[in-house]
Image (cartoon, rainbow, N blue to C red; front, side):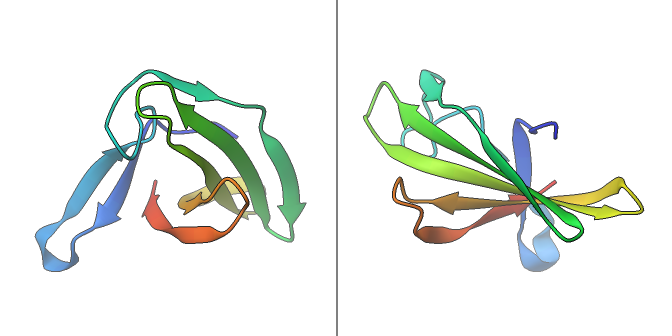
Length: 95
């Protein structure tokens, strides 16, 4: 699954806010280390988790990409943020 560098968080009637996934979510630094991806399939979804660590501020988290498929083609990708232990911290956006 291709991982996007920008996801979009909806702002209600005001459009979408772009969020860069190739930068630290805490400090915005581009000096991040991305670990090895863990990938599996759940029905019509392809799930991939990537551990991320910022070299600037030391923040660690995981990005979970959930690719929703229809007849083998990607319809949308949902991106969640998880703690390093796997606890769900919230929904980041969609792409």
